[in-house]
Length: 174
Image 1 (cartoon, rainbow, N blue to C red):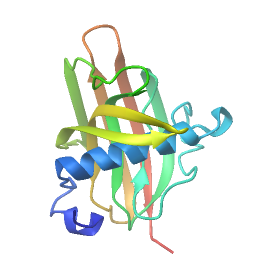
Image 2 (cartoon, helix red, strand yellow):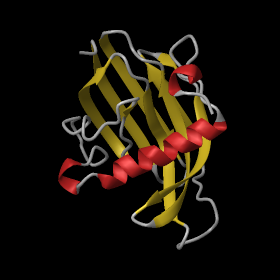
Image 3 (cartoon, rainbow, N blue to C red):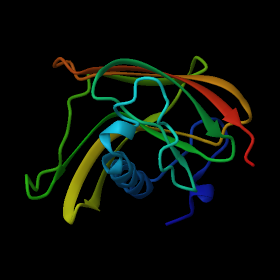
Image 4 (cartoon, one colour):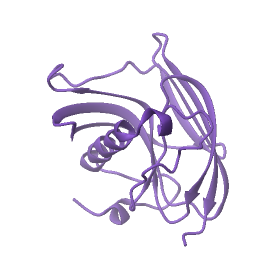
């Protein structure tokens, strides 16, 4: 498997293989699940906890537990971004069948420009258990310093929906 840098292509969408996307989906879940409730980027409705325990090689943006949320945060300009549009996971002890959600609609736009989204399946270990994950994900090449608006919308068609807006300030890497 190539490095994260090798996976990047020209344009705003970061191109990932199915293997890389599945691995990143698992890393994202470990990051999200490890946050205490008081600092959870997923529960955060403002962006205050967006920087919590970020890895050194990329920047995760949090999903939501559904509904509408607007977050404002600073991201480093030198790292790619990876985020869920719709995603789900469960421990293999619960079921050995891959989890899935129906997708009636899924989209992401960066400053009004549509981004390519991809479905990824993966595995990860957390709390001494094996987990399976599935999701519709977005990935963005490192942003130049400046201001951006990322709009993420999804609907399962079964009552669960997401409407997330990120106001991103890409700051020069120090």
